[in-house]
Amino acid sequence: MTQEERSAAYYTANRERIKARSAAWRIANPDRVRATSLRYRTAHDAEIKARKSKHCVINIEKIRTRAAAYYKANKKKILATNRIWRDKNLERMRVQQATYRANNRDKVREYKIKHRERLAAQRRARRKEINVWQRAYRAENRERLLAQRAVNRAAHVERERKRLRKYRAAHPEIFREHEQRRRARKRNAIIGDTKAITKWIKELRSNPAVPCFYCGAVVDGRNGRECHIEHYVALSRGGPHSVENLRPSCAQCNLKKLAKHPDEFLRSRKAATA
Image 1: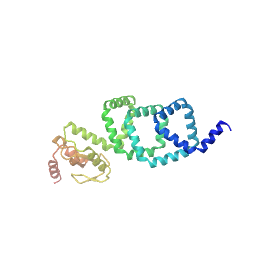
Image 2: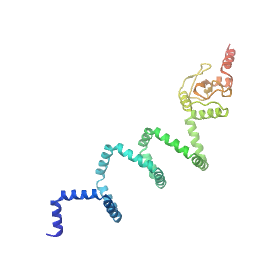
Image 3: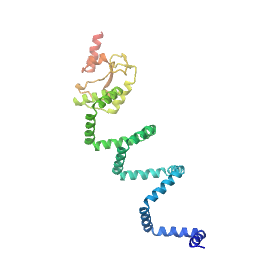
Image 4: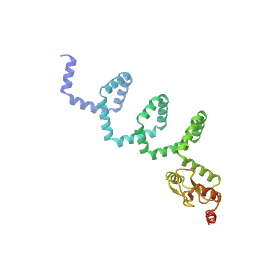
């Protein structure tokens, strides 16, 4: 019997005892185990990668099934570990992501198109968290973002004009609200909850039948030429820019009222109709 055959026979007869002894030695000597493992990986790096790659190709379905089962069983633990790692390596992760996107633009675009619905669902589920992060990022990098935006606008003037026209046509109420806020700031008026104002305007602009606050005539709230949004107490008279001071009005009443006090306008209107 050769030496190899004797070794194989000895191992077969004493397998459990040998395994237990090896495990005990590894537990007692973790530093030596790590050092030996590191030396081996360094010396056989290409061979290990090739072996792993071949194993993955052969057992891809088995690996995916096992990974999915492990993730399902340890989801909270994995997410917590990932979150800790991201917090510790935020800058490193940003650099890696930016480098990858710059070198693989076509792949990134194809991936976004292919998984559009899933990515949109993820954004909706994390909307509050994303909004908080984006606000913090914009506040931290305000000057850089403004400079970058200015450079982009200067380099793509026509594209920016088309984008702005398209956005303005799709969201007229937002631009009207911006204009009213601008007027209020110029007059040093009190500005109320801007989210509540935008919500009020959106609801008004989606209503096809809106009664004028002053004359009661029903106008189409979706048509900005027919249905005006006006300040009950004019900004020039110290009225605030808030939901409580906004009224729907037909074009005729708003253009006649101008900056008059509401009581004064209603009296003049009654006198004209008497």
